[in-house]
Amino acid sequence: MLQVSNWVRILVGLILIAGIAIALPNALPSNVRDRLPSWMPHNTASLGLDLQGGSYVLLEVQLDQVTKDQLDSMVSDIRRALRKQHIGFEFQRPEGAVGVKLKNAEQFASALDVIKGLNPLMTSATLMGTRQYDVSQPGDNTIILKMTEPYKKQLQKDVVSRSIEVVRKRIDELGTKEPSIEQQGGDRIVVQVPGLSDPKHLLTILQTTAKMTFQMVDENADLEAAINQHRIPPNDELLQVESTRDGLKPPPVLVEKRVLIAGDRLKDAGWANDQNSGRVAVTFRFDAVGAREFADITRENVHKRFAIVLDKKVLTYPQIQEPILQGSGQITGDFTVQTANDLAVLLRAGALPAPLKPIDQRTVGPELGKDSIESGKIATVAGLALVALFMVLRYGLFGLFADVAMAVNLVLLMAAMTLFGATLTLPGIAGIVLTLGMAVDANVLIFERMREEAHNGRGMLGAIDQGEQRAIATIIDANMTHLIAALILFELGSGPVRGFAVTLGVGIITSFFTSVMVTRLIIIGWLNVAKPKKLII
Image (spheres, rainbow, N blue to C red):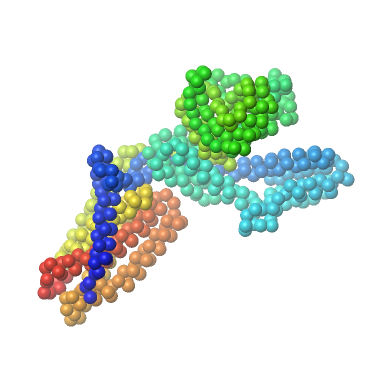
């Protein structure tokens, strides 16, 4: 029978009131929204890159460099372990592998045991029991280590995942709103930042590896010989010093290779004005372990210089005047406020596990966004008007009821996107227009069923009731298939495809609610007020 319990009426009413309140700010200009009472919603749906304008960057993770770094790390471990056992050797570097040739054949077995001990098992649950390196013995007192394919694939997967996380942290630190950061293929990252009009600055932030280390300056070595004759001590490296703002290039510095503290011990970073010099400085603070290590290092090396190195370039190399026990310090250099803030952002977000190579970069201007918004508004209004006109011409008063439900559906759809923080894109607007057409689909099924029941001789109330009851199963099936398609698009798609899938999926849910519940309540209200004698549909 055509009855709806009071609690259902109250629930539907509350949903409609909440939907109108949440969606209302989207229809108001910013100066009006600012004057709304504090207890009212103020948020609006976020505009995507194609509507608001901004920066688009496609980055490729340099996985070959990751593999090379891993092999270099294994070389260092082998060198340290074999020297500790007083085993003579020399390295060979075949493509994608590490070779160790023993000078004394009698030490081969001992060296093999040492190297096997440096070859750990994989920690991944799916690859448990698999070694990281294949160890072979081709003869001639030589041991070859080659990275296993499962380890290489797992390493590359982890590196891309960590790179995405670091990129996300860096962009969040810039204070941008609603960035889109997604993996594309096996080794690429798509970054879309609405509202950011300087892709070069974004690219500078994202490309910097930001691997910071604290190393001692070798003040006893012959710097002139290292620069002019390339006579660099085996335990040192010659590093360039960061250039000044006026273009002057300071001479390089000999720095010990041994890393005293790595940048991953940094807990926080920022910028401030140095009280002594008045220049801009970058401040940093270590975690508990890093603070202890920093205190020990500065205590043991008073009056010596230590270098703060970022991506193999010396930022500064001050002299330690006294032990630094509080675990914090500052980097004074030729910084501007912008460069100091950028460096602080990089340090807070952490180092990239691999270099990023830009493949594509674009800037979307706000003019294109405005045109798209206006075109989207016209398309939405035109679609709504044409569908509404068709429903009235086809079903008369019942078509008008469906039109009211369709308008409510649009309100609820915008409220849902605003509430969940979904980003509205141009394909998303297309999804809204499509949803408006689909919103009356359920009403068409119900109204046609009502006609059939009336033609079969049922009375007015029976035709209305049975028409709804018999159409509901078909409506559920149709909406479920559409919802499954939207979920597949969202899961497998990216960027604009996901924007379309979000609006389509949310629209399916809201259209089902309005087409079935809201239209039913409107019809019941009409029957109670007008008390018609005959069903005209």
